[in-house]
Amino acid sequence: MLTMLNSGWRNYIEMQGRMLKEPLAVFDEVAPARDLKRSFGVLIISGTIYALAAVLIGHPRWPLLHGMVLLLNALGMATVTALVGYGLMALTTRRRVPFTCVLPIYALSSGLTLLVAWVPLSIWVTEPWKWWLIGSGLTRCCALKGWQAAIIIMGSISLITFIFLFCIKFTV
Image (cartoon, rainbow, N blue to C red; front, side):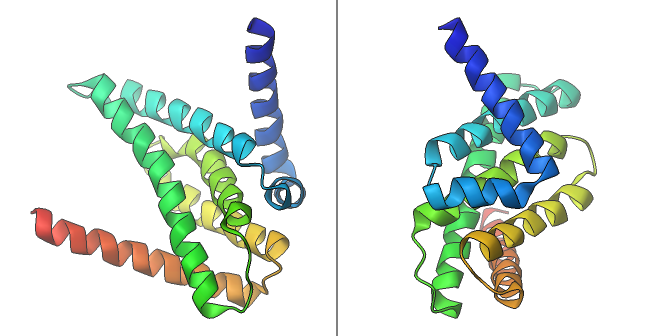
């Protein structure tokens, strides 16, 4: 059991190191293979680290609840943005790429940026970085042109922002 746990951490650290050094090579390897287990493993570990770090620096009243909400938000947003991006890809391009090829791109990109996202005001660096990684993955793995990936990314950001603003309007 301990060997398997050490192997999992070693794979996680290796994957994150490779994402930092050569993200396109990682996308070439993981997305076409539809390696959902590995990419979601990275997202879950990164989301857990993000939630723990945010709870430790934030001192919330209910730390366990706060941490669980942050973890679920991290996992959910990666999935929601992948669904939105996939939908926009289907609407704007003639490419028929399976969703299982798109989801690892979003999971790995979010997983990498979550390691820094708990730092206050880091959103100004992590969000553009995450979207650049997603765009790079879409062009590399889904054979999109740069302008097509840019349209999908800008459309995704606009649609997600609209949905949040719409939801906030009815909850306040």
